[in-house]
Image 1 (spheres, rainbow, N blue to C red):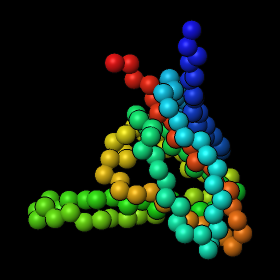
Image 2 (cartoon, one colour):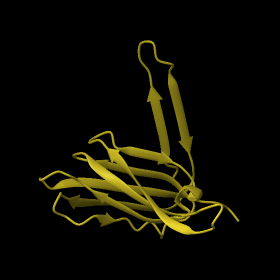
Image 3 (cartoon, helix red, strand yellow):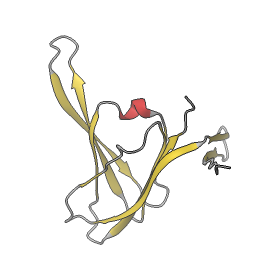
Length: 136
């Protein structure tokens, strides 16, 4: 009998004069990446290789200090049909991190994802990506 792993992501938000949000999502795990890296301000940007996870479902980044997720995406101009590289940064605060409940389409067109920090001290960043099993 095969062992089935069902990761679950739960988000709860509550407080005075705040609409309470309580969400949960569970799925059957297919493949995953779980690793911890060390970076500091003098390190070159760390490039994430997420290619070996199909049907991406949950993407999590968490660090011991603040860091930045750099996203690079190819975009085609609608009129000229010229392709250009667009980049944007997502600053991520320590401890709480960044959680994205998504699917593969978020990653479509992304040519590169990198991490960097302004911290002079070495920081640890946990990278987790979980793919959903889809029966065929």
